[in-house]
Length: 499
Ligand SMILES: Cc1cc2nc3c(=O)[nH]c(=O)nc-3n(C[C@H](O)[C@H](O)[C@H](O)COP(=O)(O)OP(=O)(O)OC[C@H]3O[C@@H](n4cnc5c(N)ncnc54)[C@H](O)[C@@H]3O)c2cc1C
Ligand SMILES: C=Cc1c2[nH]c(c1C)Cc1[nH]c(c(CCC(=O)O)c1C)Cc1[nH]c(c(C)c1CCC(=O)O)Cc1[nH]c(c(C)c1C=C)C2
Image (cartoon, rainbow, N blue to C red; front, side, top):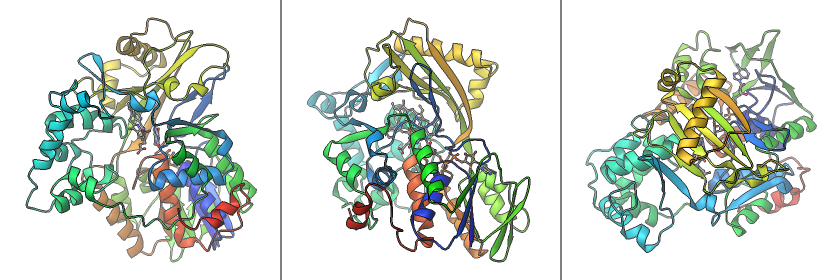
């Protein structure tokens, strides 16, 4: 049997890996990647001076099922010695800032008397009063299927928290507008269900027992290391591309996967239990297709009689971001932290700045002192940004970004390296009603008996962890048991039947 995987980003690569790692019915697997490289939004550049610029994802969380699974995957791939990690007590973990009223306001994340009982700018109320307000907030009588993040947190904790905390945080993840983003699909827990059951989000988060129904088999070495050393975030010595490059190596080494770059799929024609995968040069007859591409790109590949599915897929939208990587030679920042975010009320077009050198100093230039930053622009406010800039010439964007950086971080020196990357449709948006839309898509595929699996960031999670874990769980249907794994940690996979 033949499977075709559409897309060579981390979801497509993970799909291929899990199909070859486990015994599956597919003797032939073809991965089609439209561009000339693999990794998708994972894009790492290594400058001549040894500095690393990430134009997409730069960090992974160890927490949660997805976090555990990605650590397990790194172990299985033999990448343990290439992992670099930041612990929870590191300044880049403890210090996150909101840039508001033209100054940096450190987010009071970790307790303390002053932080708890006295208002911390930019908020006019203390954390303690926010907690009391949330515990006392009324619960709507009617069952709410879904709600915007702004609406939910405004009624639970107040508009100020929605506007000055949730707004920037979700601009920092989805680059999106919380008045449209779904509270059901964008948060790691079902807050509406928790509110209904416990009459308060705080009470529910404290009281509910995390069901440990995780029956997955994990390679434990790096999971145990991350737990023991209390990692907060991690990456790789040579950047995130090490993950996609190693996945490619291992997939090819396993033999029955053919990776075709610069080979876009141009169409899918379903015919009973077979599907014709059309490229510029041929039509591949497959028994199953795994699509990891953006839902609107998949929508365009479907002709009649798949109009219904095509229309549903087309309803999921994405935003575009401009990512500006900047390095300052012979400059040591005096601010340690993960970075700062801006509420849309402060400046809609500037989403935030990541202090890359504060998190991963290992990625700095080898031979001299320097500081690296990544500025994220646009997102749901992309059109406003284009209007403000006037044009999207690299020099226009570069001048603008460096001016903003110098204002917001008081940097007086000129940058030594700048890379501008325009990432079109890079972060899918999970608007109110997204989970119902995904259910309708899944139902349409199954009702029509289409040999099609949907993975990737369009549906159930935008983080790298979510993409990998969702690919693994989606393809479980084909999992006929783990093949002998040659990875250094193979015995651990067998031994640790549960975590
Ligand atoms: C700027 C930015 C910063 C981010 N930061 C983080 C972070 O710090 N941590 C984190 O966990 N996540 C982060 N993310 C999210 C994460 O990077 C993405 O969600 C994830 O990489 C998506 O992977 P994917 O494989 O699902 O999709 P993609 O990476 O989009 O891969 C899809 C692939 O399909 C190919 N393709 C498209 N059409 C076709 C076709 N017709 N035929 C064949 N191939 C096709 C594309 O070329 C692409 O290679 C960030 C994302 C962005 C954009
Ligand atoms: C300012 C814009 C953005 C920044 N990062 C992203 C955008 C759009 C993209 C992004 N960053 C993360 C993820 C994965 C989310 C997840 O579920 O793990 C995505 C899609 C990582 C991340 N970024 C922030 C948080 C709190 C997280 C989660 C995990 C972690 O702690 O590493 C917030 C944040 N993003 C940016 C900054 C400057 C920032 C906080 C100061 C940049």
